[in-house]
Structures are given as C-alpha cells and as structure tokens.
Image (cartoon, rainbow, N blue to C red; front, side, top):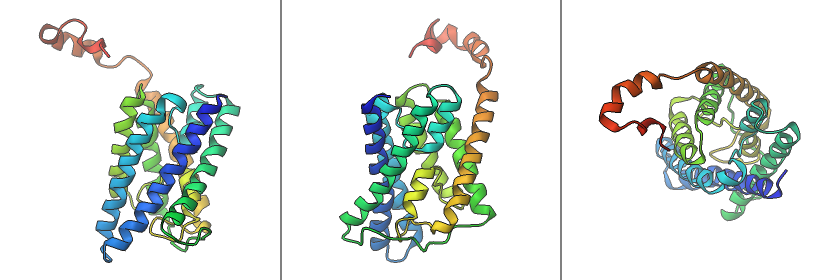
Length: 237
C-alpha cells in the first residue's frame, strides 16, 4: 500500500474531525443558545472542508476518510482487504487526533468523554439512511472532482433531514465520543450508531449495484440530443 495514501487518509480524517468538532464548539459559543444557528454553522464548515479535502486528497488516496466507504470499496474490489484494513485503522486514529486538535485550538481539556445522548430507533434509522445515501453518491461518482461536490452536498442536506444530523462515518462517530461538546455522542451509544452506518452502507451498495448494473438511458437520450449538441456530447469528459 502506498505510504502517501495512508498519510493522505490520516491527514484528511484528522482535519475533517477537527472541523466537525471545532466548528461545533465555535458555533455553540457564538449562537447564544440558538441550536438552529449553531447547526447551520456546523453544517457549513463541514461541507466546506469536505469539498476541499476530497478535491485536494482524492487523487492520492481516494479521499475516503470513512471506514464505511473503505469497506465498501473493498467489497467492490477496488481495495484489497489489507489495504482496507490499513485505511480503517488510520482513519480512526486520524479522527481521534482531530478531536484532540479541536480541543487544543479552543484551549479545552484534551481528553474528554461525551455526555451527549444520541440513541433510539429514529437516530439509528437516520444513520442508516445517511450512510446508504453516501455510498450511492460515492459509487455514482467516477472522479474526485464529481465526489468533491456531491459528497458534501449529500452530507450537508443529511445534517438537516435526519434526526441524527448525519454522522455517516464510524471513525468520526468514535472521535465525537471523545468530545463533550456540541458534536459529541455518548460512548455507550456509539456501537448502535456504527452498526446502523455499516448496515446502511451495505444497503447502499446493494442499491448501487442494482442501479448501475446495466446500460443507462443514454441511448434514448442520445437520440434526442445529438441533433442539437453533436455526436460526442454525452461521451465527452
């Protein structure tokens, strides 16, 4: 496995977690108790850093930053099992370091345990839906430049239409259990979140295989647009 890819995954995971947790801290301090404003600020920062990191590091490692994505890529044959295992370990380490970095930047105790309860069927379903959608977006993106806007757009939307605010990432979930802040999750509630995320990821893979398994409606579309846009319009990249 290329060492550069592991470094890219570690760096991206750390900065992603630092952004999610750090922006939550800043948002909570500035929002004056308005949770909607705090969540909006948290969402905007997460979307921005995801877009940046995927565009920057995607050509090096694929910019997974997420064990669910790496596991699915292994199941798709795009990573070997050892490569996926290395990605997962480094993503978890990177995200946990990101939590420490966020605490350090806000002059807070480095080591924390979250007391933020996040549990229940609605939360678990939300995580499954958010992660399934993420896998659909990832498998439907053929280039990092596509993923760089599609993934942040999905996660940003899922922040608001899911009850769980869309963790959709086992490594981030573990890291957020180490932060007793706006973005935190109680450690006791982490296993159910991760199980829901992995179940959603598998469901997303099954749906993606069904959707992308055969020819798309390109031929019929080509017949309609070729006269207007030229023979090679739909095949140009």
